[in-house]
Image 1 (cartoon, helix red, strand yellow):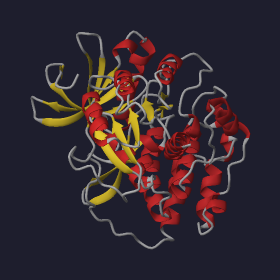
Image 2 (image 1 turned 180 degrees about the horizontal axis):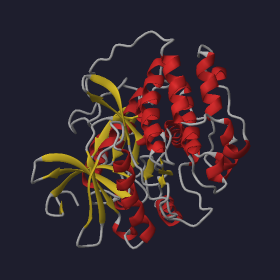
Image 3 (image 1 turned 45 degrees about the vertical axis):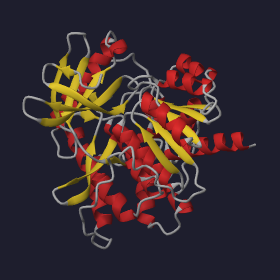
Image 4 (image 1 turned 60 degrees about the vertical axis):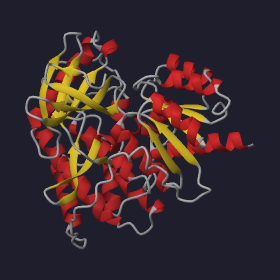
Amino acid sequence: MLGRVIAERYRLDARAGEGGISVVYRALHILVDRIVALKLLRLDMCHEKHLRAWMLREARAANRVDHDHIIDIHDIGETEEGEVYLVMEYVVGNSILGELAPGPMPLSRSLDILEQVCGAVARAHDLGVVHRDLKSENILLTTHMGRNDFVKILDFGLAHIAMAPRLAPEGAVFGTPYYMAPELVRGEEATPQTDLYALGVLFFEMLTGQLPFRSEDRATLLAMQLTATPPRPRSLMPDLLPAAEDIVLKLLEKDRRSRYHDAHQLHHELRALQGCLPSRTWEIAESHFEPPPAEEQRESISEASPTVLLIDDEVNLVATVRTILKRAGYSFLYAHNGAEGLRMAKERKPDMILCDVMMPPPNGFKVREQLAIDPATRTIPFIFLTARASQTDKLRGLESGADDYIVKPFHRDELLARIKAVLRRVQR
């Protein structure tokens, strides 16, 4: 796939991300020599009319809002093979999820980020657009005009646009369960207050370093969103200002009528709280988002730290996982395709391998098969880390002898807990 030219002008140079229905590539617009991001609907999904419509809706939603903190959409089209593609501005940055790897953010930083997100969301709501899938991995932080933490909101694919036709059956539940408002769980129509609930989860996560509701079982998690009382942020962070906790809890009210009237009211509250804090000086920080060169990856915390090899060609995911693992005390190795991963596994003999399924050949299933028949690598603990969420794929992965199968998107705590669980099992 890499090196392929889409629509005679977009050359795919590197895979930057992956979701359940699409893959995002870093691409070069060869006619004007500009780097862009190109989202390509998976070929096996192209026959799904509602998914094609979602891609078009994403383009319309982002362009309707036209805000500095929302990713720009440049082009949309269809290849001769019937693949739908979306071309966006390419942003070098790290998601909030990646930035939370070492733990919670200071209040001043959390407020600055949420204030930017809220400004964009308020603009979207004014124009009849509800995002419906705001979460820490959909918000990139980049450097812009001489300051850090400049927000770019991604992925309007699930956006609800006022007066637009419904794209899914009435009552269908779409979104990310960790951030899903109770009314979405019940299958009700999304409203601006639905996005405000997600902002409450995001604010809680930034301030405490964890999510208000956590469970690996989807049904249990959705039930918690419906009825469970969230923990008070100050029970986790005693020094947190009461006013910040009040904002979080108001956003997380189960009854949407008890949340803020609109994003503008929330925006006013955030700015008022910012005014009570010491001013912050913004500096341009050294970029840490690109994966390290292949030959410079022995960045051990100590000689005894476990070494994890990640085999994946998604640039942004590599940066996120690298940050999470290194700040948790692991050494980190990286391979950008299956062939390189097999070579590094045999030469470096890591303590664990994390491996994507869909990547330049051999794919993850083939990598697992070849590792299992080689005496030098067959005992290395192995976890699939992939967006392929079907039960068939999961069973195939586990039946291959993999120790675990983690579906993207994942939370930092979940990834670390499952890595530790596998390492404990193999050490017994």
